Length: 159
Image 1 (cartoon, rainbow, N blue to C red):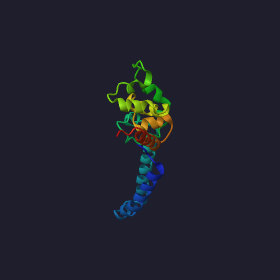
Image 2: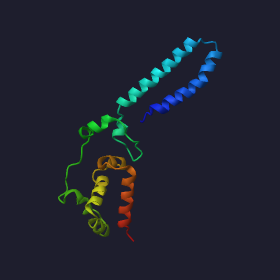
Image 3: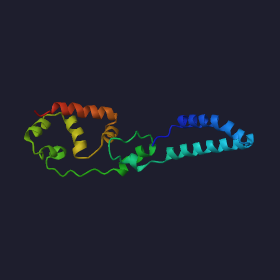
Image 4: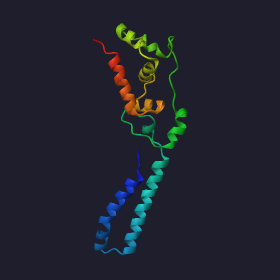
């Protein structure tokens, strides 16, 4: 979850433009109104601190490609400790899954792809990573990963 302090502060200020006259009309003293405003600012600051220092598991392990951009420094420092990759069980190495396909024409086309394209496909097929995970791993944007998959799909179109 992303917390943008400037946006939240602006929303609070906009709310208080409406609240101040309402509270004054209700008979509250200016000191009481200021105390309520200070309380709301403290809540805003507490929320900012909470979202800055809290890492949600749904952001670490997204279920799909819909995961939001992750701004927490905790994930970057601890991700290697939290991730486990599958062991290499194929005798053909990382790309052994190509030999396991039931379509010989597709297998032949995949074998002709550059190693970088095969690695992207292996992230998806072998490692079961989402586009967001691959983007983080390769230090590129999700859009770049999606474009890469589209280019690969064009190369291996079966007629």
